[in-house]
Image (cartoon, rainbow, N blue to C red; front, side, top):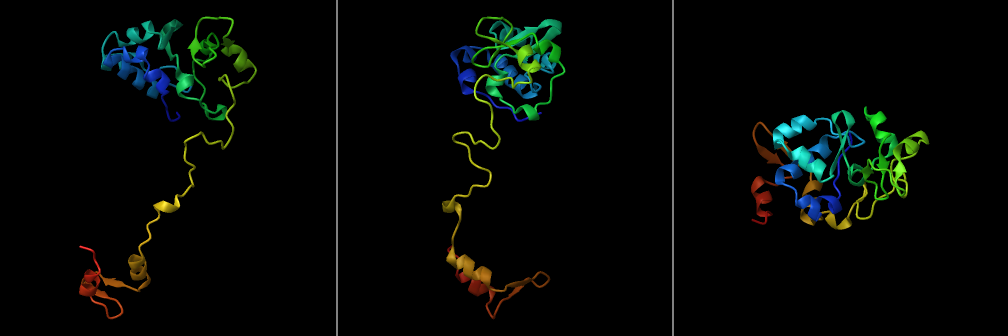
Length: 194
């Protein structure tokens, strides 16, 4: 399972914030435990934790779609989490997924409309479940930090510390004293700023 993200346009919307606190907590936990296509793996367990009616509240508000055979899928999962095709662990509910559609904003829907795309067609044509630009390998998102980037201002440069590190200091752990080019522990303590 991949790392999970949340899109603030969904979780900070008036509709979402109008839900009960328990329903909001259920939604976050459901997103975290969902498979890579957005199917909730443990809806009854989450309802036991957050109370009866929380799942129904989310279904009524259309944040979670109820599917046949008591399957539940997070409507905005692809908005929150865009995963590279090669990293997806395919859902065990693939037959149900084929009956859903994608809206232009990448939300799942069970209503076929003229501006929706059939997920079945996307899967059969071996395409990514996403409307828009495809993900490119190695592309950084605006505002992200490259793994190996270093800020030159973050390096501490203390000349006194560097001079001391150049000296050959041997610590005798048994006797707990310094042997350092005729310099005693008191001499070292004099250089401390406090």
